[in-house]
Image 1 (cartoon, helix red, strand yellow):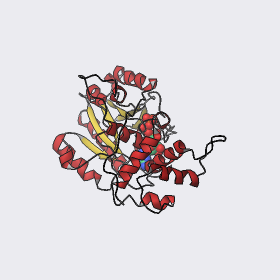
Image 2 (cartoon, rainbow, N blue to C red):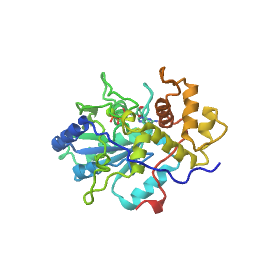
Image 3 (spheres, rainbow, N blue to C red):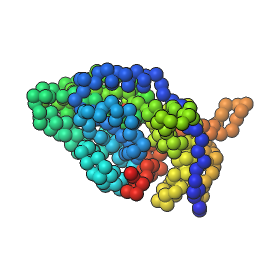
Image 4 (cartoon, protein in one colour):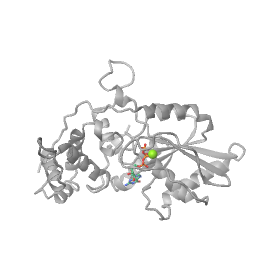
Length: 324
Ligand SMILES: Nc1nc2c(ncn2[C@@H]2O[C@H](COP(=O)(O)OP(=O)(O)OP(=O)(O)O)[C@@H](O)[C@H]2O)c(=O)[nH]1
Ligand SMILES: [Mg+2]
């Protein structure tokens, strides 16, 4: 089997719902109440999931970067990301979480570490922080509400606690939530926000020289494959094909999907993959059109990756020579 060496890209994203614009304004307006920013990024795309807007707005504040979904990224991604930060941004606090917590489980060490880091910050300067308010920001679907809930559990301030709604698609949280208290003494509050996509995703194709560049098609596809955009309005078949292209490039992963789908071996043909998924799950169009519902099969394939079924794969290039 010889995997494809290149992937033909087309214009990709066109998704920037109104609630994101509103959320960004709210973040900007309410920012004087914020002592600490917890920026959640996807460990599978540690660099692509940075939003330059956050850099601008939040520059002067304390920041902790949390890489979520570490359980879905390549097992050895952590030392590479840590090394890159040690070299290029040594003052950043960087943590990794697998924040998916079944109800009732005890908080994982990374979550406890995060609570400790926040407390340390507050305790270091009690005059400045009689209490501390942290804002959680990040791309859509990156795991902000999941992290908020985990922190709330770990902080264990007691009493009944309502959970933030969590969901597998982008755009679940649509408004800035009321703050939740995660610890007392000192009081630490947390504010969950809706995911905000890099607006450069929008400017693609509309750019006429000068100004900031839009996202490359490759970056846009990574955002789609990891779930930061809404599948229904991006081209899900193109994204599924890109996923197939990336899986095939990794010898350890190129055998996983054929085994799951009953294919004889890896293939470069997305129609073969979608056909197998469609048949297995009986995804067919209604008559009179008939045939396999390939869009639905494509979404299924993307969800298999997002659920970790297709193996752990990091999409950003983490080799030191690729990071500048
Ligand atoms: N495997 C894995 N899944 C996670 C992790 N964190 C979150 N998820 C899943 O990712 C999806 C999105 O999680 P949310 O917490 O709703 O994400 P969000 O950033 O609040 O999303 P929006 O509110 O839409 O911006 C859900 O299906 C979560 O179960 C993680 O660390 N590992
Ligand atoms: Mg949310």
